Length: 112
Length: 110
Image 1 (cartoon, helix red, strand yellow):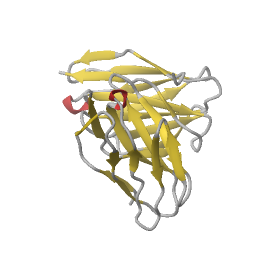
Image 2: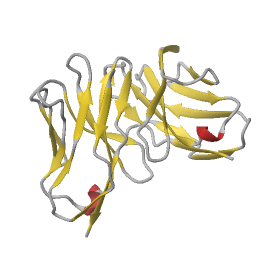
Image 3: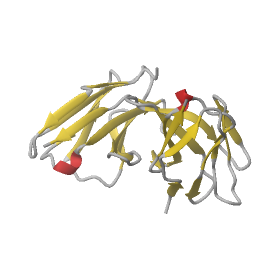
């Protein structure tokens, strides 16, 4: 039990739609990171937020965006969904980016 | 650049067998190294870590030694159990992100 929760568990969307995934971190965790895990692959870093500001970004297009809120919740938004966006999306949080990161169970997104 | 390479699976073993999952890394400097485990239907859990050369991380009977000379961090367990069936990821923290290997699926037969 990491104390990090994600919703929804599963989601099905069609190409071109927009989706919002949510993450709730532990109190005191100032950083939240989002990762995309395609089937049979390791997680790939999307971006990280620290105290509500984007702190780093991986090789993902601008249609992937995020928000972090003062109550330790956060969102990942993906616009103009593509078939290749089908994956497990993981959020991870920690007190700082050098601290141990705790992962949530993930949201499995299927784009048809 | 920074990267992690781990042996491809799936790996199938009988209960009580010895396990090795190989991992090598490419990185500048002297990074920490992690092993994460992902049980079916769950997120990632940190299994063990080592922060400097010759450190040995251990947890739940698993061990891995940080070898700078061979840039390796192989995961080992002397006697696996059915409950160890999962996907194991070698990982390298760099700046504000974690770089993961592709994962090795482990299946233990009773």
